[in-house]
Length: 227
Image 1 (cartoon, rainbow, N blue to C red):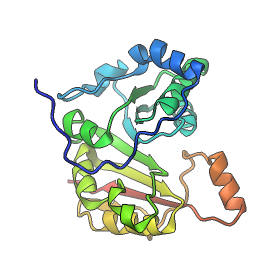
Image 2 (image 1 turned 45 degrees about the vertical axis):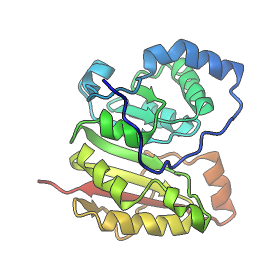
Image 3 (image 1 turned 30 degrees about the horizontal axis):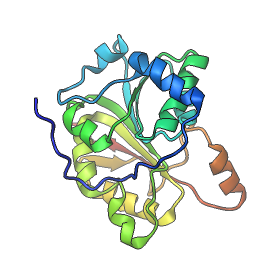
């Protein structure tokens, strides 16, 4: 099958970050077990996890510490974790191995293309997007992931009653996300504007430092409206 050419603006830049020997080894040895390669066909999520369970997609997991913590605390759910940067992929694979986590699968690929090519409509019970790149310079705002065209596609992948949870520590991005999600007719806000941090989302070390300095963090939790 011919490969598609991406036409969307990418919300990330592939940086030449240092991959440690342990991360490189984890990618080499563990991706065949816990990784899912990109393909131009719908993914059978139950087959990928070898069970029927709620499926949560995380877009951009960074180094994967929060992903591992959430998955361990909620063994009743399965987590499809997307990240493009190899150091983070290697680190999460190390955590999966050292903590014996069985309910995470990793995809190292562009989220827009994964949603387009592999995730069936109404396949997901939830979506996590924690601290996406804010692209804080005004001329770069067009690169932000959370924009109306992306959300219009994403919402169809979520089951009615399922949720999308976005967290950011940039106020102007939080305001943009709130506007975009409020304007999506298939989503309802679970709060008035911003939500309290759900108990399942752990505080990161960076976030704790920011809060001590008086920096804000904004959580937004919306649900897909029932049919």
